[in-house]
Image (cartoon, rainbow, N blue to C red):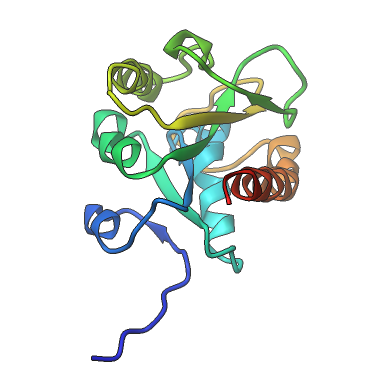
Length: 177
């Protein structure tokens, strides 16, 4: 039986999590509500990353507003890098890296998805084996319901955050090899 080697792709199917050994893979997980403008930046970043060739050790997932539905990711991956929006008072498009140790280290709730996300992170911290969590945030200034349009500064941050995500993932991968 001849199997084809798959390149990492943006996925939304649970079946993918059972298709390959992820012990040496890093998951980059974009979260946010795509229909709330800048709040959906994590999803926009995943869509752009799906268009480029990624290293074999990187998987990407559009987590959307998944909340507890994403828990299987935390069992499957040893390292997870989140991408999410934050209203932290910094200029729109500012990229920050946070090493969250508790759910309270995640950005303040922006929309309904963060309630589920924070609850899910609390559940992760109760697991026997906790993944190594990293959080890239993109600062936003406002929530605009029912639009997929991004503030120009937030949109211009996408190539920069992708570069930073891949550089960070490479450093983590090399540290674990």
